[in-house]
Length: 72
Length: 139
Image 1 (cartoon, each protein chain N blue to C red):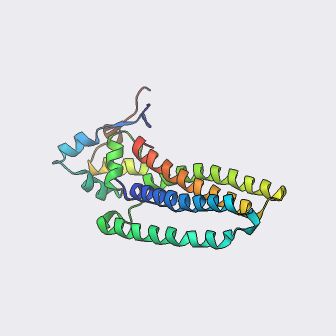
Image 2 (cartoon, chains in turn yellow, blue):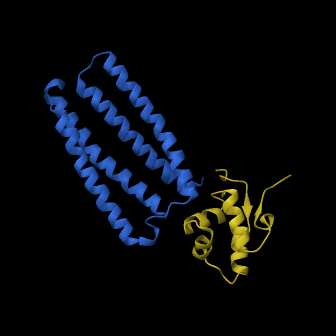
Image 3 (cartoon, rainbow over the protein chains, first blue to last red):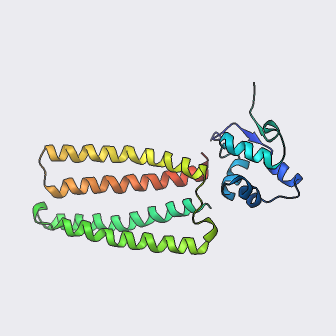
């Protein structure tokens, strides 16, 4: 079955780089549930721009360092 | 598992059990009595009681088991709910037009009321099932 979104991300790697930050901690800082962070990491859910920016800001990284879109 | 997914699973199961029993009983009565002699109004009303009690009780238990997630409802939950409600809405619309058609051909009230009831139950079950699929497969 095709993945629901083509957007990929480096959230898991960035969490590890940020001192093994847990999904729950990232979720609390962004204002979503832990399960939503997990779904984003697994490519099961493509977040809104607002949540994407919030996640990038937690890691102090540009948006495209966190999320990637193939082609273009 | 998100609280909303657990809630959808529990509510779908409760609907299937309660209204499965309701429609089985109605079918049994229809096999023994003419439609216009079956007191379907009290049955319809009484079926709501176990539905409400089981729904409230199960959600209290779910909330007690995981109080932090009980009020969690983020953008993904809202998107999944919207998509599931839209699909459930199609089922409900078919049921409404079935009810209208039954009224136009002047069948017994019991059939009209229960066609609408069945449409609502099927819409809710479809909505719950869709939510679970979307949570698991992805949105």
